[in-house]
Image 1 (cartoon, helix red, strand yellow):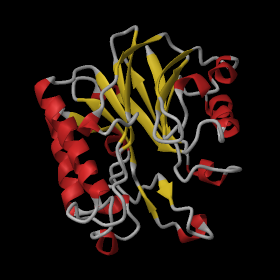
Image 2 (tube, one colour; image 1 turned 135 degrees about the horizontal axis):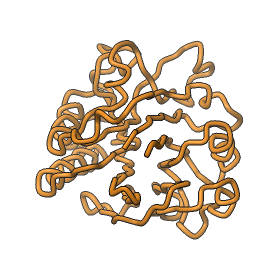
Image 3 (cartoon, rainbow, N blue to C red; image 1 turned 120 degrees about the horizontal axis):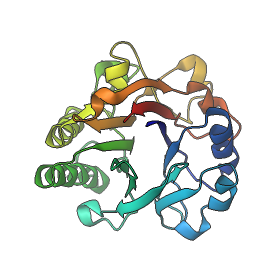
Amino acid sequence: MSFTIATWNINSVRLRAPIVQKLMEEEMPDILCLQECKSPVDKIPFEQFQEIGYTHMVANGQKGYNGVAIFSKLPMKEAGMKDFANLGHARHIAGELENGVTIHNFYVPAGGDVPDRTVNEKFGQKLDFLTEMRDWFHAEKPEKSILVGDLNIAPREDDVWNHKQLLKVVSHTPIEVEHMAETQNAGDWVDVTRKDIPDGLLYSWWSYRAKDWDTANKGRRLDHVWATSDISNASHSSRILREARGWEKPSDHAPIFATFDL
């Protein structure tokens, strides 16, 4: 069984339903995971996506903020959701395919602007969220699983446009990178994107603040596809659809793809 999975922070699934449909029709991933849906589950335009073949959805939503959803052409059942750090936020949903593969869709808190939890509560919430992810993966070791989503951390020097300048900027600080590494190691997760594309600058997010994001190219790789080590060798063909950042009324993130032969 071969399937392609895509992950995309859409920044409002209802506002950007046209480009979600565009991606589905032009790229045709078998599974599409969205973050920052900003919608209650019953308001997600599922019927629109069903009409083009995405017949299954599992989702965790709330009005106006956060929210995660998985749309699938393949049969999928809900496999749970967790409220990390007791934030009361819709930031995790899991679905299970008929072949037993579990897909976890995460939206890790951005963490605010100041990388100091003593003066910025949001940064503390981000670190606590990652710590609870780590502890969960230690306690319940994942197997035959794929983790995708906007993790809001660019871990490597070549995941940001300027490593030295961003060392004190939220998303690339050493403490965040350390927390992310601990979380990844706890679940024995493999960074599929970097397995397939091991070298070179690689970005999935470009700020709305940039007048010409494409020319400036001050990006960060905040979005990720991981797989547990028992299935990571089945992955291939990872890519980032950079051009989607330039579509009409775009998200500030671009979708990431990976294919699995399982």
